[in-house]
Amino acid sequence: MQGNEHWKAVEDASERIRSMKVRGAGSIARSAAQALSDFSKSYNGEDLVMDLRKAARMLLDTRPTAVSLRNGISMTLSGCDRGVGADEVRRIVMDNADDFVKGSLGAVSEIGRIGSELIPNGSTVLTHCNSSAALSMIGHAFDDGRVKEVICTESRPWRQGHITARWLAGRGIPVTMIVDSASGLMMDEVDLVVVGADTITSEGRLFNKIGTSLISLAARERGRPFYVCAETYKFTSDDVFEGRIEERDASEVSDPLSPGDLPGVRFRNPVFDVTPPERISGIVTEKGIVEPSMAKRIAEGLMSGPAHNWI
Ligand code: RI2
Image (cartoon, rainbow, N blue to C red):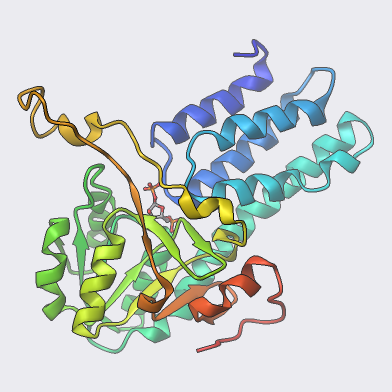
């Protein structure tokens, strides 16, 4: 778009995020942070701060639901407008991006360590879609000898469940895949549910892959715990996220089923849904396990000090 080499990093990252070549709320945030770092590194234009704002906008416009993307970008650009001269701005952005990427990967690992204790010995765990944070928790618990089996949903329409199943099988964890709509029936064989998060609002509402809310209903009906794994940068107190459900192209739903042979039928493809706080048993963050009612405090950055469990 802008014709300069430095824009390529941002345009490429935006395209990869929009087309889901890079996906997962944490991965898209890290990818955006890295793109802003690369942009700054190779920048040879007139006004780095102004162009960083444009680059941030381009990255933000790719996917609307995961607040991780916005928070990752904000953390990467934090303080850059106070930099004096392009070299200082460049250093601030590159250091911030580095800190964000390392911090977010560290948080995923810490969530695994902290969350493992929630899984009783010999458990069958159900997970939905593909969340690196949820898999960190399940993987740690398996290493601790607590997980007997994982049931994973296919996760239509993108079938991210295949990534999950491959990862689990590769670690030697017994895994069974089901279609999403079998989650209710299978709940009888499940001890607890563990999922990831794209956004958690200050009221403790979870935005996650379409189908999550129905799974939480089935878990609640059968009295199964429903845990969410979420790095603290996936929390927000900004109400603007309340209504933001990404709706992708309908062809992602219709093409594999009926290439053009259902004339007159409208397809829709909302890719996230909302799970209310009363159906969430606990949220595992890198700072500890919290109840949904704590979400506002986390979003406002009031949590401090060492890892601590609130439930
Ligand atoms: P991690 C994914 O969204 C799923 O909804 C998943 O639960 C969530 O991001 C969190 O993933 P998508 O990008 O950050 O596949 O835990 O639409 O990897």
